[in-house]
Length: 289
Image 1 (cartoon, rainbow, N blue to C red):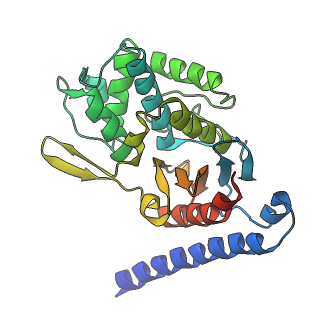
Image 2: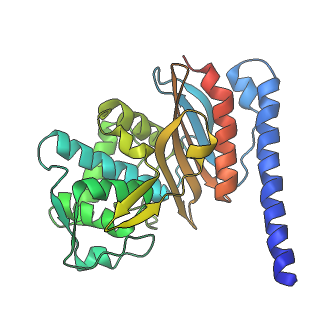
């Protein structure tokens, strides 16, 4: 009975937290005045909280909270890893059918992982799907070594250089996966820039980010981006979590000719994170151009 009571209490706390998020955002929606005045009552749910909503067409910020404060990106990092794969394909340096070898280093990465063994390989196309859906750390490291001449550290430098090209001036990458590293930081605003750049620069590949399952060696793996199911018009992007980062989410929404990208970082649970994003999108998609 003690276990059942504790489980019920945890579920109750999550439900109450979602109500708090919903109430706070709803209050700002009805407060009137300018956008800046409207969002003022929205308070972070944790000290780690940061968020932004951006009109993807104009680049105008519709909502921001600690948007330029550095946070740990966790697996949102993999959006840049995939960006680098897209760029390499467009430049003809690799193809979707090329095989990415799995090193001992890659195979030894901690979960979440696909579980590949050293000496195996994975096609580029499958690697992208696995990074988006499964958020596999072993595959991320294999990609880094594949594109970084055998060195994940070198690839991380390439990722950081690309971040600067995209205007992500407060982002530093140390690995391709988002596994904990105190030197690997980003901001909600920078992650929004990356999200918009993925859509804008690679519309022919962007559909990968809308996938919710992947089949590898006859095994179907389902993703855990529940926001895709919760938010009307959501067309993709990425979740992330480490203990240090909290629960992160980047979401793209296209609805009624409007295009919006949102990033939420540092929430206490996936449920609260998803509810926060759903509420923000319900309010700010209509304010986009």
